[in-house]
Amino acid sequence: MQLCVALDLPTKQENLDLIHKIKEYPIWLKVGLRSYIRDGEEFLKDIKKINPDFKIFLDLKLYDIPNTMADAAESIMGLGVDMFNVHASAGKRAMQEVMERLRKYENRPIVLAVTALTSFSDDEFSEVYSASIAIKADQFAKDAYESGLEGVVCSAYESLSIKKITSSEFMTLTPGIRPFGEDAGDQQRVADVAYAKSADVDFIVVGRPIYKSDNPALVVAKILQTL
Image (cartoon, rainbow, N blue to C red; front, side, top):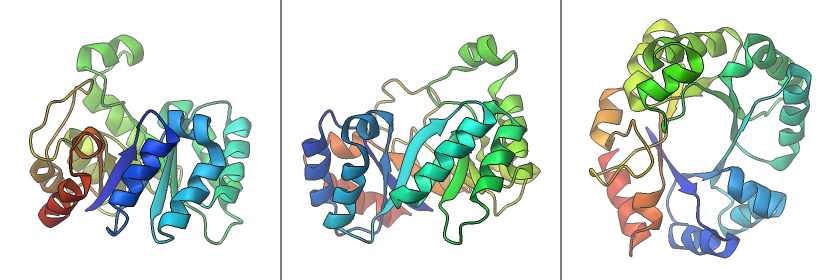
């Protein structure tokens, strides 16, 4: 299991300051929608300047018509990131077109599909998708697996079921991890590291418990010790 630190701070400089504090650790860094829209490709380059060994997960959740998603995915190839995601609810044809477009590249990023956002409660999710999270997450994961993606974004509670219906090698990345039982904030389906390990999760994403700490490096070190 690998640790991915979410760079969700209000300014580019705050994110860079955080990165400097944790630059010695073998971790992934997640660049989300706000950070990328605000700071763009230059921010990705700044990360690599601090430590070229950092792995970058570009969390943009591509969701559009198939051709537009494939165009965007191909544009991402020029950014030097190591992983990005699309939204599974865009459908199998869109995911297949993305993977077909990327086939010509030798060293392409890992591609994941978002199943159900961890901010959803089951009732809220059902209002949108007319099915429970458990049922729909499995379906979305199966669609992604059959479309040639490497894994999905889900909560820790769906991980084992998804691996059972796809493959033990099909990766799960789980946001909303509160390593040592911290407050859930605006997340609904949170878990700690121990549960994530028991669910065979491949990547855990941790944000607030690290960047809100007075000593982010110490929190990262403690999390890595538990992995």
